[in-house]
Length: 255
Length: 291
Image (cartoon, rainbow over all chains, first blue to last red; front, side, top):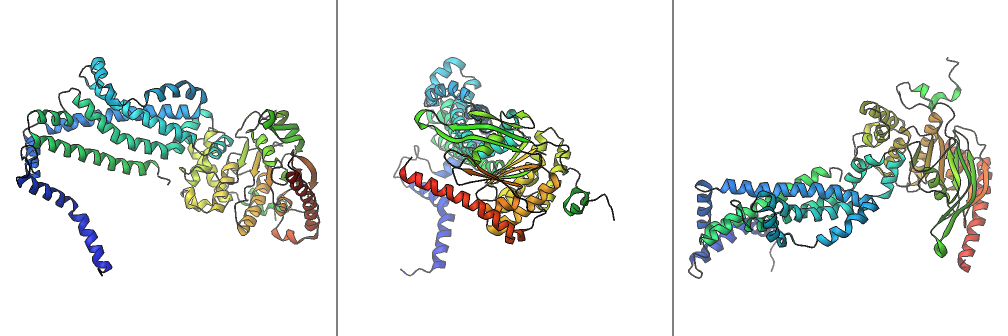
């Protein structure tokens, strides 16, 4: 067509800048055009208003805090247990033989399928929520750490042995940092896993939390607040992923 | 001026009093005795005899090169001294202690530098002393001394991936020596380097060895390298690996690279070359028949 290269680059930049405004603009127009039921599909301005009310007159901050605490407790406990046990099964054949068959049996069970049992075991307490997120995170991190340890360069382990590294120091000095790139991939996957496990956990019965509020608002036909809750969930989970990217770079500072 | 200092001190620690830790090992340690070892891999029909009827004694402070065609088991022998491989028969001892696994008394330099990528150059060299229970300050002091000896003190804060292959290998040598091992095992350490760097590394290694008097067992397939470095060149043959000839190298020390042009060097090289060539041809014929 004969568009100059400069013009093309300019167009590309504007496409990026306008992506989100166009999305919300289109949504606003469609909602207000009469083509759809505005009660079920409210425009973004009304969603923003619902969010504002939730924040000023409702418990938005408490909901965010509760949801975040569930993700954090479940994620951190699942990650620590997964890394420790993964290093042990990756390094010692006996422990691997003892635990791997059981883990491979339990691993494919989706955490959401545990919800009914969890309610029986833990009632509506926080323990049940932590357990579900833990379940979602643990196996992913365990597999990553297990494979990571097995893929540590054998010569690196030999070099450490020739330098008189005792076996108990091998873990912190060689195996953990050597497996770290793999562990981080597992951890990053687990960040999103822990968010969708959270949704299942909160739908199963609780008294606060973002996903809980989405459910309650839906029952009251406050679709604006439901959609607002989805946006908050999306934002938090995207921010967690970004923060994790920064954390990853710090954890493998050498590459 | 000072009659107590012998002529060769231009490279001895006396000339560099600032080096507190990089001193020769006291006493006559580093004696290696390999007694009638046999090393086989696998079992049944799959089994492979890598080394048979192999005996070798190495005196403290000696520099011995193992040389031979590929597959002759020279690395296998080295790995049995390191303790990575246990012989099927026979024993390997260092200073009258039978080897039953790897340990800090036997330093090793591999073909690849194999540095810890997450540690700085200083952290890599300080690793051995730290594992030996030295304080951080002492370990860093030792590391500093050995990095000066390999000429890389200015790079101590760098990470390994920021260095060239030759520099990484110098760090690996400093790391192995910083542990004050009785024995230094080297498995084709300069094989991956370009020719110019290799010469420089060889001269540097001889200088370090003359300063520290560590026993060195050096595996290579490069005849020039073996003769240039060694007190003794042990030529091995393949299928199974055994000693073909143990040649002592009477060339004077300190040696400089010009010695490669010496007539005596050429004669020694021809001896080794003929032995290895015969062996290689034999192996080639055997492979053709399919034994």
